[in-house]
Length: 162
Image 1 (cartoon, rainbow, N blue to C red):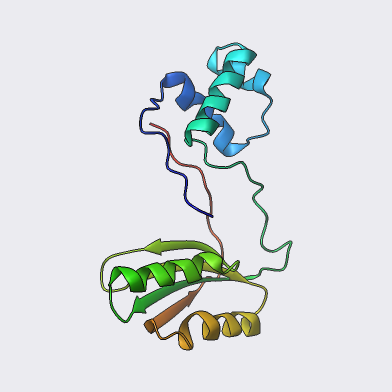
Image 2 (cartoon, one colour):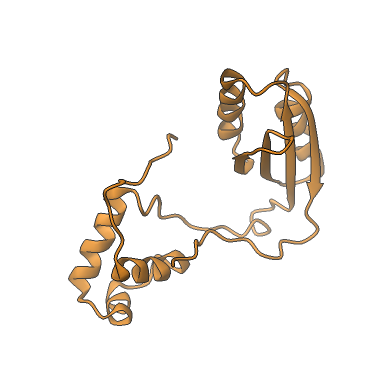
């Protein structure tokens, strides 16, 4: 899915920021409750949320699923080093990582490695198969290193709103 860029002309005011702080933690919060919390009318909250969705400030409304409930019990942080940093190479790797549903997050980074990925898998054999497909048998990848999470101490999607 192509990344939607927020409308650069959209300016957040204090009401928008207050609304964002609430909906980031629970986007099913009734708009009347949000309106009371930010001291606006329900209609004004509705218009502001719609404008933030249209402009791309609110990129998606999703359900956050507990990995343990759906048997995605292995969480791995993987560092990947590509054979080179040419645009064509990194673009191919980005497309591959985006297409893998097990890749929950993917970051193109600096500092001696090319990517950091957060991967969830149902078992170690499933993870091994994924590493073969994405890394070990991939001519773009020189090296990869896996860190297996012992515990998910904190995960989240909310961004601190100044």
